[in-house]
Image (tube, rainbow, N blue to C red):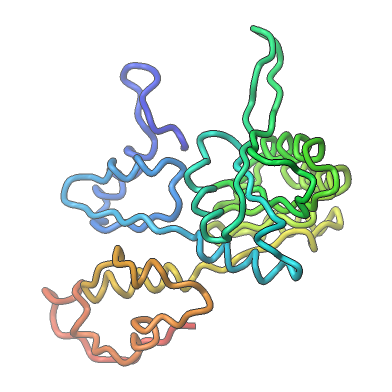
Length: 278
């Protein structure tokens, strides 16, 4: 599903195919959050609008509140590969920390790849490293990065955070291994995907307390209500809202007459009713 280009002539590009199927089913407005490749937004079908959101402010707020001794001068943000640099740089800007990158090299042609840490400073003063990725699936890449970071900064505390958590296969076993061998303190993802399944698996192996879920429902609710009211979701005053700042549009939503919703302007008049957001 992450494939964003055609490898073999005639094959479908999954994100484009999915958007076209949804358009055929009647959807004409799409909201996405931290696409694996932002170029996929260009696959939006004709006659439909797609708005890309980012959970970076919610993730950054979670890091600041979940690490009691967090100090931007003593922590680094690490990208898991070259492809995730853009998202990780945004996180580094939000947290105002330094930036490093893990990348895979092949010392010899045809030989096994090795993960090296690319940094422009010494690791002596580093107290903590936050590994950032847009998604975690089997956690194989995360394991390789954690092992390389323990060599780069043996005394640094390790944390991992990302937007989407799939955790397929034996990902829960991999997480436990990282906790035991690399000292991973916690791994956090948003609730863009239901995490109840992985929570049960982690609880069965006694590492439930090392897994955190960041709630981004307010981000999505704020975007949805703006779409219904005909407002833009691309203005800086919306995209700049963090979890610690009240959303004025969302706060006033229960008092907006239903007739003002753009998606029912062409329908018969509906009975006004209060809209309650939990």
